[in-house]
Length: 418
Image 1 (cartoon, rainbow, N blue to C red):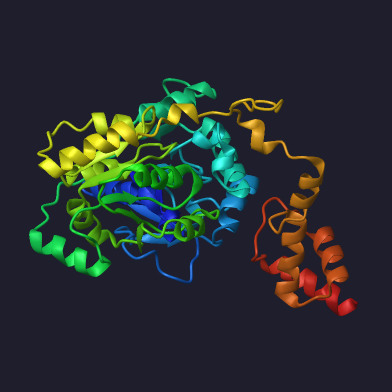
Image 2: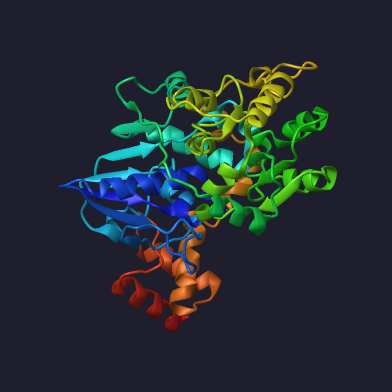
């Protein structure tokens, strides 16, 4: 069996837990006899993010992100076979179905944006909502938790189509020398409360800072992770002088940082799984996380008992009693001050106002703009001549920046006659 495996998220600015889980899954699948894995991604000038280099041979498509995602959704092009050759299965791992002639498997890591589109950028919520809608036609859908499965059932997916495949972590022994090394490298104190997350609204980090501020004898708070969208990172750094921000932690150092922490706090409001919770527990670190989310399920699924020191038990009890985040109070959209309550729907983002639709019509992914740019790139023909000659002599079934020789010749003759 030959499987096309999308790896575009390795080039995202913040690959996150989705890239980590999919890379480990690819490593395991390559060891299964009878399965040939072929990675596929867009065309990129730079290598993947450090620590997220694919172990598979990766074929490149003609387009790069963000044009790749837009073209996949609007035009269903380019198909993965154009880079990988014939395949038996196409596995789309980033939540956005890749066009393919083969049966499709789509992994949807998190669909909380269907209920709370304000937790993403407007562009991100639109792209991901349309991707969930397109995933309905796939042969199978995998998700990491029962929370995501329930959300998919609520929006119309069938029970037979959804398969829950929880994420996992590797147990790695961390020596005391590794712990001391990361303390010196990132300036960590002897005892501290750790939070590892991308600094964006849904991670609920301002509430964690406020809860920690109310604890009198709690260890210092360390928030590690890159800056995400919004102004969360800037606001936290300016309003929290007592919080330590070491920035991005290398994946090779992350397990040692977990082991060095006294308590790991993860108060995210919405998660598809919550891989950092499992990683911290694998490092024998006590965890405080949100109730009513997938992170609670990840914590309860851990069967290995933890051996806690006296300081860990005390800090954990204080944090649990005073700083536990009740996410059920903020989940969903509440009606307030006469505002209409939003309902989870696949069509919420897709139905744009007229003015927004007019603006989107001028997007560079529209065929009218693409074909004009293609012609000007091919022969350098003036705008008016290019549009008339190209439209009259070609049938635009799918966009392509490289025309066949007959189209090039016809464009050249039209330019010469002009």
